[in-house]
Image (cartoon, rainbow, N blue to C red; front, side, top):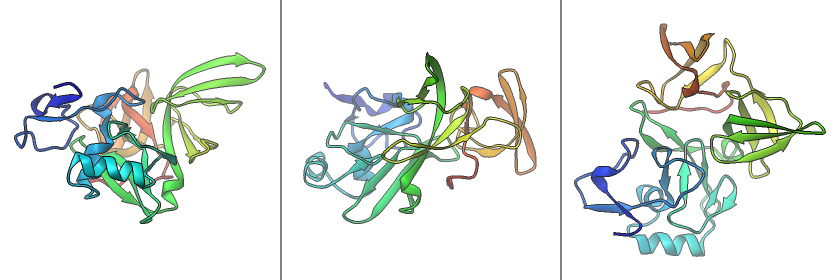
Length: 225
């Protein structure tokens, strides 16, 4: 079926009932890889804002549904890790995070928290005249004069994407893992050794890939189950 996936072939990060129905809606290509995002259709149903796909379409066209502060109407729009989902009319806000098993979940957050997000710098291009283009993990590109390295994170104001702070990937930083066997875990960075890092969680020292780490710096509360 065009526009749908067989449930058995959906990413392991999708927390869905795999034996319920044969097919599930497929997200359109977007800012996030499919393993790191879910279509709005699924998220709105899981949150109880609609029972059917028709319900979801009606809500998206009649109500304000915001992702990172911008209105979205496409039920197949992909919303992913660290994105903020807001329903201004009912004053409800949510953030997409990973649970302790590395699966995508939706956590309710405060209105204050909904005004910011953290994005990881995954690419950088120097354009000249002091301008730098930073490529972020959520598909966003920012032109700035702010100095940040690949691997650092940016605390962004929503929806303007104004950089409020650069969160450096360095010893002592609070990090959150996006991939690997420890995806969804957080801890304090102890050492950086080439492409590897060692972080401490509950007094245990754990080695993993530097590429898996997102610096959160204590700026955003991430509590998972």
